[in-house]
Image (cartoon, rainbow, N blue to C red; front, top):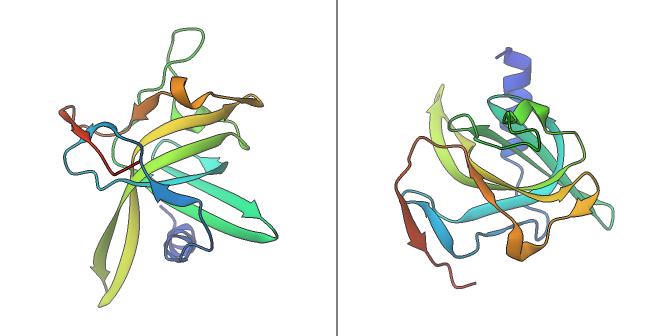
Length: 150
């Protein structure tokens, strides 16, 4: 990854939340290590190994950047499967992520690791919450029921 892109990504991922687009995952089956953090927003860029999203409300913008732990398994209407790089810009998704802190050159840097995605709006149509599916981006196939009080 080019150094300039890495630097921008690190700075964006260190921005504290401005308002409520960060939240807690709904009760469901998740990998044991998952801590329950989510971010919902519009996709501004997605490729095979990372996603960037933004949420704007009342003139304030909150940005999220995360690296996928593993390729996501996302079905498509034609049955061939879809990669994260094919997610159209402007699509509203929820990223299920864990934050990791690493030391690089003596500085602590936070990195968001995306473990799953859910599509909140697809092609301009809101996905009803009770039928929203979670597509995992992790190699951990053992899932345990996790309740965060929602």
